[in-house]
Length: 341
Ligand SMILES: [Fe+2]
Image 1: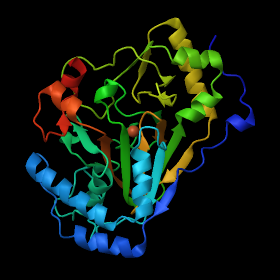
Image 2 (image 1 turned 90 degrees about the vertical axis):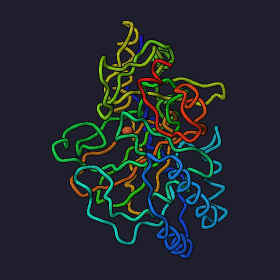
Image 3 (image 1 turned 180 degrees about the vertical axis):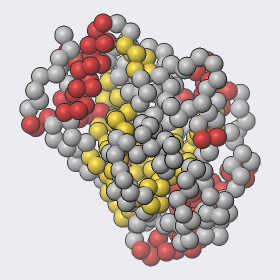
Image 4 (image 1 turned 135 degrees about the vertical axis):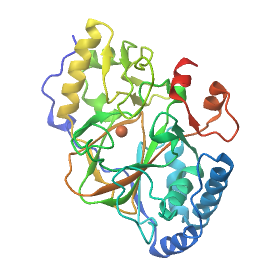
C-alpha cells in the first residue's frame, strides 16, 4: 500500500528560494523615521490596537514602492505564491536586548510592529488565539531558558516540518504566517512546499493522505484546561477546488484513525526526511511570509542569538467573530470556543 520507494534525484530537488524583493534604502529610512513616532498600544484595548494598525497601514502604503505593493498583492491572492521574502525593511533604531522571558520589552520602539501591521494590513487581517502568548497580535519568538530542548518556537533544537494550529478547523485557522527578523545569527527557517511533497509522493500514498483519516493534536505552545484538544478527522495532503495542493500536519502529534492512515503517516514522515527544503535565515529587517497550508515549515537547530517576531494572518476575521459572538474589532479568539463552534 502506501510506500516510499527510493526517490529519483529530480524529486529531491530543493525548493527554489521564494521570490525576494528589497526595499530601497531611501524608503526604509523614511518609513523608519515615520514609524518611530508611533507608540505601541496595549493590544487588549481593541480600539487603540485598531488605530495603531490603521496608522501602520497608512505608512506602508506611503513607503512601499509599486513593485513591492504588487508582489504583496499577488502573494495575498488565493492562487498567489506560497511564500515571499521582503528585505531591507525598517528595524527599531534602538533595539533592546533579546527578552529572555519571551515577552515584548516595555521600552521597545514600535518600528517592527508598524512594519508587520503595514505589510499584512493592506491585504489581510492579523489574528491571534487567547490560549497562546496571551493573545498577543505580534509575538516574540526567542529561545526561552529551560525550554531550549522543546520542539516549539521557544526551543533551540531542530523543529520538524509542521503546520501551526492544525488542530483547529480550517475556517478558523490562520491562512499564513509572517516572520520578521530583529536579531538572528544563524537560525534557518525551513520551508517545504505542498507541491514538492505531492510531486514526490507515490500515487497510493497521495491517495491515502487525501482521506480524512487523521486527527491533529494541539501544540505545546497552547494552554488548555481540560481534555487535550484534537481536530476533527481530516486529510494531510490534498488538492483544493482550485487544483492547488494543500498540506496540514500538526507539530505535536497526529493520530491515525485506521491501519491505512498509520501506514501512510509513517511513509509521509519518511518522505519528508528525503526532501530538501529551502533554508531561510530571517535576518534583521527581513520579512518571510508564507501560506500555512501551502507549505510545511520547520527550523534547524541553532546556537546563536535569535529574536524574531511572528504574526498570523487571514483574509477575514468575520467567521471567527461570528462563531465566538465577538465584537467587530476583536482579533484574538479562544481556540476552545472555535473548536466547539
Ligand atoms: Fe511553527
